[in-house]
Length: 445
Image (cartoon, rainbow, N blue to C red; front, top):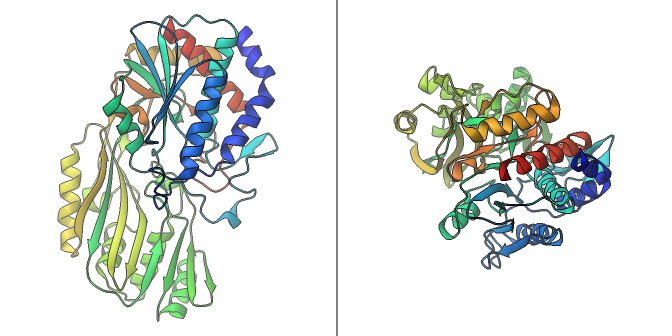
């Protein structure tokens, strides 16, 4: 109760810290060669480590800029808490109610890119640790907060850590949902390519793990395409010689919650009689589906549910065609079944398959001690049902054994990670901080 009240009393400090971190626009920038992922991500990493150092934790900054960590406690056993400071791009900032990199507090919500993924959670962990330290908690196990830098792309930061540093015995990542996630689907990201030149220009999608909220078209079918989009009821705008299809961004783990601007653009082009490898493949094998049923049929399992599939990037031009796809595979389904099946279907359309990334699934028993500990903490702090759940999200829990995702999203709340007007409710942020403090306290005992 003492720690809980301490956290409540420090609400404004928590809000200010999160706002300050959101103010650092830590989107990947590989054109800047001073640090692997750009100056802003490196600044966010250093800012975060400095905050942990100020509360009494010893910190380490990887000189190459791939990761950092903060540690406290004694003993041979190491508990890991894995988080990240990089964020996905903001998309069209004109669509935001508040600037995405200012951390604006309005109506009990703090708005900004990264508010829930993953800057809000890392600030909650920071203040959970501060509450424990300031209230005299004895750390008879070592707790290490590991801060990654490339989670939204290729995980090079955390992979660098795992090759060079001590691997925790167990732990959690505050980067998904409550109550506690016992299973995460396998994540496969691929590109399908054609070298055929095209007379049209289509481009859409900013990130491989976000449903694209816009797609643009240049070409001779401009006014016919506008008419077709109107006929199909797809939102669009015409601006001089560019036609925009307007969608709604969402996390790739839940593509049904978004509106895919790329697939809508392609379906309208196909209806006009445009035939290219990319257009034909998407229109015939994806269309408005999100579970891959036009390629794999019904693909699901009991622990984790249905496969999800999302076309998140497209680039059609005189230089060729590229489709970027994100696929979340049920935990008991063989990845080879999916990759070989997609490769065979793509080949029929003249598209070459290129695998970009694959992350193995997470699958712990619901009776695992770590799952049961986090479940009980959640139930005690909220009074809600703590039945463990499965998701399609890809979190750092995949990077080591005996690690699971734990929060920050509460049941029944809007899923706004990666979306326009991303926010976290202040009450939820404070409750997260209290839950994480109790969870850490319970794990070190």
